Length: 350
Image (tube, rainbow, N blue to C red; front, top):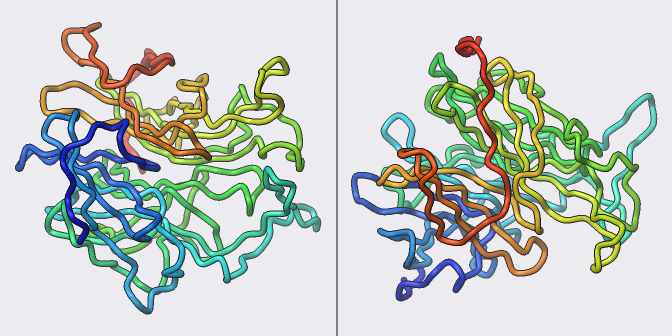
């Protein structure tokens, strides 16, 4: 394990795709991220959300797994479920080619920001388990990811529906689909693997604010889907946070290009299958991959990283649930908090 450091503020260390787990039994917050130098998942810990200690390594890819040990994991997050702690993280093997998207007999092609063609390769979320949020986490299935092996997927997260059935919600890469999607696959009760076929929740092109231009070599594709997170709101509505890229306005002093943004959607049925109604950009300025958690004092926080493509740092915005309107922020963040729509109680997931 790495040697813990003295306490540091969020502005003093690098992280990507941050995920915070409050552990009430120990009064500790765990911030999970990837250490690209170690090629491992690490955690930082805090008791006040201001000073963080770490990093401490909690997961490293074991020998013999399907993924490449030379490619660092992405988007780690930890959920407490059925008395154990489950790590969801995305692994890769760039040497394994996956099928291209084909529509009407035509192979679809995707292009990166540097003009190079992007090809689908093995990528998928896996599950590892531990008895403590500090790990070490053991890979449940070293032979395969949770979603179908032919799918290039990432950023899997846990959602448990009203019937108690667990699902993994994930992004299906635009590199393979061009129009990226958010999908869900049912899981076995112990989260050890898939327990059914994936279902489509939404497409990247369904966001009303996205530029519908065909992806080209001069700009990032407009139909990226990234970082889904779900949260049941107090009145019963089901909220999904997800991220994508938004075309910069023509008069932007930085010139042509796209910025990473945090957006959201709400299920009109209150159930996982939707239909999902898209909201506006919640947080712009090249920040996203957000998640929410409730602090021990009842404050609800949105956590995201900023500086996508440069040196990402975590950022938090907190909103006290009661009394209404009270607010505190670890680092102020622009954007509108989505209001919960008025509707009848949600139907139960089938």
